[in-house]
Image: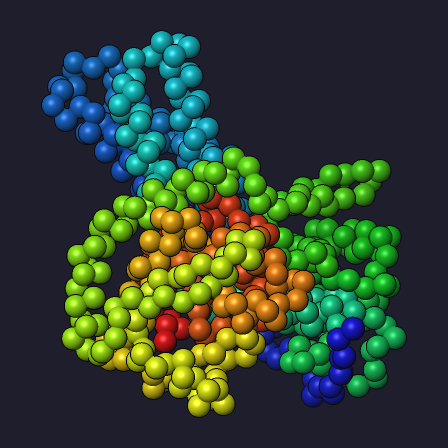
Length: 495
């Protein structure tokens, strides 16, 4: 178990600036953000139905259609917004984090389109199918795009501390409290700010204490007092032998009517929502976790999409790759393409293709630079590696050196999205957990690419790879591909 030291603290309660961010203030910020989303969605829906009408009837006089569209358009827009509301698309518990927000918008729009089509068929209203198709297709895309833009603004606000975030009081044993705090702080844009902790009575000393930099504001007997003192709007309960089922149930009763949410943080981590199903059995909310999917129809679809998209991207990128090849030849002696042995699916080795970005004797020079390694774990990374050529530095900054890997995807060695392809020397030192990275094909991009690349620690890179292996989905792949564009433009961690 993790060793935990309780350090003395100079105060038992947060300072005045923390206390001023009360539950009421946080709720007002949340409601303001939700109202802004409603206004944006209303504008998007209005634009979509108007575009559908213009796109379908741009050359047809209004008087010639069967239905008065000046009535249909506003009714359709209002019903669409109500459908979004009914699908809980404005629930602040899903706003700003995870894919559930997008899934709800897509599902609500899909159900709305199906409902309108079925209703129109049953009561025989002559609404043009082209109008509906344009409106719903364009509207769904724009709604998701607008929500993404709003989320990016919210994430920036949360990172800088200016946006609303849930103020959290963590309750549990000291090691589990520290683990949960570390997890929540790893992704600050999720919007959970830990402001205090409550630990078992036996560990609470007479003098104020801290767990790391988190103040211990009370024991299990004084959770309500700690809630009032810290002004939190969320109590997160993690593992503890003293928190029995009865004690948790009473805590839930005590928080009723206080506008404070109670959330449970189970020991089960790094499992995505679609694999988790909660089923009440004998009054117990049992969590069922589905096994990861490594075979089957979805894998076949992923394979077909990988090769189809890779073929299109290869044809589009051929002029760029030709120009890069010429620049490499002019800049330094040696081959244009660098082929390196990597390990892929089921531990099979293959040659990964990249544009050469280093001098030809780079491997021989590695031994002299080992002491200057800037990362932990099994990889070697150096921000100002002297082996990198002038053209190579430019290619690495914009990830252009990886374009030849499209041929690896076409050959079936790699996927567009997956874990980082490891070297045989790395795999030779894998333990049982790390070997799970080889259960899927490595990818040109992945969670490691969109989360910091070389700036990540070895531990975080492995965690992201294993998370992808366990929880991959077609929707997640498309999301990662979209985020890769932004990661390349920002060139964060590219060296």
